[in-house]
Every structure is written in C-alpha cells, then in structure tokens.
Length: 145
Image (cartoon, rainbow, N blue to C red; front, top):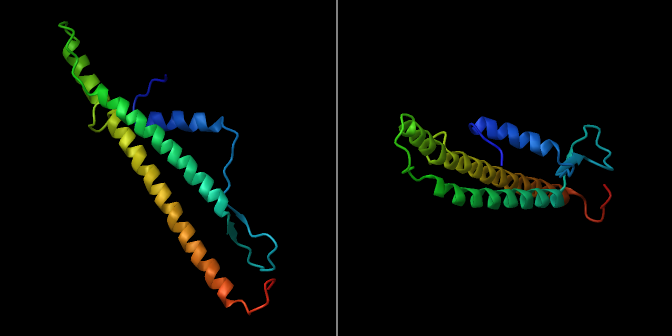
C-alpha cells in the first residue's frame, strides 16, 4: 500500500503505475483506404467499447475503495499526549469527506470517470450520426465511392 499525501500525489502515482502497463486501447486512427486528400480520423467503435469497459472497471474499483474509506472517517479515541489532538485532527481530514480527504479525492476521481464515459458516449453518437449522413449521401449502388 502506497502513502498518498494529496490528490496531486495520487495522480502522479497512478500515472507512474499506468506507464508500466503494456496494454493499449485504441479508439481512433487515420482513415484507411480513403482517397480523400485531407485525411481524417476513423473512430473504432469496438475500441471505444473496450475503453468504456475499462472505465467501468476502474469506476467499480474506486467505488469499493470509497466504501472502505468511509470507515476512516471515525474519531481516534486513544491518546492523551501533547500530539494526540493534532493526530486526531489530521487523521479526520485525511480520512474524511472534506477537501483534502481520501473520500473527497475518490469522489473527484469517480466524477472524472463518469464525465469521461459520458464524453465517449457523446463522441460515438456524433460520429455515428455523421457516418449515417455520409452513407445516406452516397449514390445508391455505389458502395465503394
């Protein structure tokens, strides 16, 4: 288990961990077999579905961590020494739902994942609409145009 100081530190650690992963999810690439001189980007719908599944897995994982983190939001009953008060206060902030706490960071990550998934859905819907419009504009029987 790694020590995390704040949200930015968690992001750095996550990026470092992700750099070691070798699996790559591809959702778009250059248009293949196109005679258009302007080029373009082709959306790989299967790749988008793979990415959405990966996002859903991360969302579920973070949701489980959030449930676990809720148990951190309890007071510390032990300690009467000169630092006990400050330790209780620090632990409450780090374990709690306030800004800077674990729960707040996890909720922020969950919101980002939800936004990313929604954005992917929007992009797919837009591209499918453009593809359908382009297909409808082709002359009948000219599938290779």
